[in-house]
Amino acid sequence: MKEDLGTRFDCSKERWDRKIRKLITPKTIAVFTTAVYVCSLIPLLWIAWYNYPSADDYSIGSNCHQVWITTHNVFAVIWQGIVRAADDWAHWMGYFTSNFLMAMPPSSFGERGYVLTTWMMLGMLSFSVMYLFHAIFVKMFKADKLLGHSVSMLVLFVSVQCMCPAGRCEAFYWYSGAANYIFVHSMSLFFFGLLISAVYDQGKKRIWDLCAASFLGFLVGGGNQMSALNGAIVLLMAVVLISVCKNWNRCRALAVPIGIFYVGFVLNVAAPGNWVRAEDTSGMNPVKAVLVSFYDCLDRAMSQWTTWPVIIIMIALIPLFWHMADKISFRFPCPLAVLLFGFCMTSAMITPPIFAVGNMEAGRLQALVYLMYILTLSLSVGYLTGWVQKRWAHGRREEASGSAGQFSAESCWCLAGCIIFLMFGSALTMIPEPHYYTFSSALTDLANGNAKAYGDALKARMEIYRGAGEGIIEVEPLPVQPVLLYFSDIKEDPEDWENKGVARYYGFEGVAVKKN
Image (cartoon, rainbow, N blue to C red; front, top):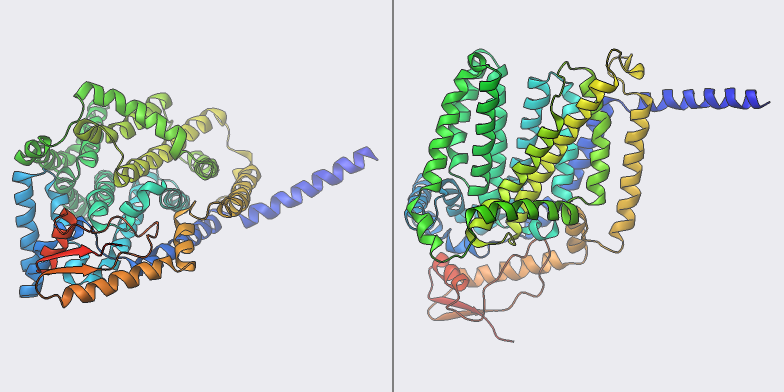
């Protein structure tokens, strides 16, 4: 009797294993993860309709806006952006690429253009991660492109939806902060992807890779100093590895874009404006800044960034990476060194603000470092998984991978368990904490009317600004402050820098918020 029950149980298990292996395949996982990620972006793009400029969008973008109002010439606006970037390079800050981007917010051509901010940032981040992962997994390691795509979707989901709440507004809705950090960060990912592609592509495609990498390399080197320093470290390590492996014959052409990157980087860090701005800040000495950066990275990783959804998605990546590693010949040597380098990379991104101002409290800075942490964490999980797989499966193929393109039953059950746990856990979490995810935060403020009330109030202000006469204009205070949309607002004092920026942007004498 016991033997019959055991046999029946084994048959039942085999039957369920066959069913789940037919259900969960690389193609279905790619389709499912893409659908989930795209659907999770809809609330973020929807609430962006109620987004309007604030703070530096006015003060930095006023010159380009006035040129557009006067000439309606796009090239004249671009030239004004270059002039503003050059002036800031000489008198305020060295990151000329970021200065140029910040000088031309989408609202320069009309306030309603500001809704494009979220589309630009999410689009750049999404496509740059997809491009980089395709270059790494498909071009470099010859892995299954569907699995590589699934990994990029999962990493993007956790990057966008699980971002620390303090950074969401400044990462995706406030243009000046997002253009300086998120947009330039995405450019750097494209740059790294192009360098990898240039090694493996042939003919005209390789020439295109090198030309595009050279152009982007200069811009990334001149971007925010966190991303620029990060790029300088990565490229230096790449040069060392290429030299040690004596692989310069294949990688010789990379010397051009790498050299051009360092030209931009030197112009960035040696800019006269950096010394001007440094006079008004109080940072740390370099050695202390580096040590504090290591501590701060570890502290934030343990207490803020590695939330339970991040852990679940990292676990879900393991069977995908395992399946990829089973099909490639690379042996994944020195895993501890790779893990340490990933930690150092994330820590290094914290060093510039610690050195310059002594802290990393700004939301846009936290958002940028979080994105780098998730990127290095996911790649580290993949590398460690590959190392374990090569030693675990040494001398044999994985038993359940005999059918081409199929996961093992264990991998399928792991993926299914992660999906179910994430769904139920998220439902339970969002009930007491509706702003837990970025998409749930957007849905909350859309549903309770805060987003519309905020947008309507700012729209009414725009009408007043455009019809302004002489004297100080007074406007009503904002009725609400939606979590994703609100960054800052003008004050009751018309001499406040934000108030002056709005007045200069629209060309009137002054503006103030009515006193309660």
